[in-house]
Length: 423
Image (cartoon, rainbow, N blue to C red):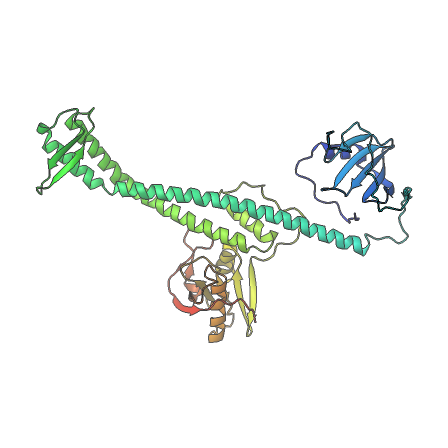
């Protein structure tokens, strides 16, 4: 147990136990405490609105527990209720009389009396040990919340990527069928040319084509030859009309898959709540998550910049931490004479070498930046990675493109070994 300097974040849903605490203890003052049976059980005496209640903290067994009781030790509420049972020695339910755990055999101390609490002279805040404990648990809570948000967002992204992959597969099949449109027209023409040989009720017919080859044409037995021909012509028109739309949708599905897989990489590399919130904001903007969800609990701090900076031989090298960070350094920070780099043909960070003096960038700086671009990419475990580089003036972002997506009007390529050492 430790003192805290500020109120912790509240729980998401107020359950019965917490409502009981609010009802009986809100605005109260801890007047005394005692250690029960010299064991890991502490009883806090709280005075609030003319009444006195006991809040009992048990750090025993497989999990901690909290019990709210009156001064007669009648249980009013329990965080983790323990119902009666054959093997239950000490049930804990509202209405029962609270019985503390039996003292262990090795305990030799006597029952501790209530210790009155007073504010020490010159008190300004928690003692160093309390402050350290507070920081520790704040960090633990923030890490757990960040891990939960990371897992939640990863689940959303994986589900969306799988959906996009299914959509791409379905469109690929539809396009393949639509590309057979000319065959539908040929079948319709063959049926019309040979309708005097056909009759209603047939399911297939072997018809000679214009080049002398024989073609098997499937027929709907419920339709006449003319109606079957009309059905093939309608399929031909539909295929021709829809293939352009289907190809556009296929390209969009492919684009969505690449983007979502890059977001998964960003989630794995995100090194703090700030980066996770940026990724969540991006996903929210594209409709993958709703606003107001995925908040990170804990002390709110200023957001970290969406990029990291490496200093090498007097030159600043910027590295995007996410798709949003890539856009930020490429489209907002980079100037025309800055050097822009990216691992070729794979997801990864944009890298920008700042060049405010419009000088020739030394070969050593170029190689260092290329190594960083290789390291912060999907190919970080490879021996060598192809890295594209160009002046930032030759990098542009197409309208409506996903975060991190750019086009290069000029480029060069070099092979670089992935290295993260900022030295």
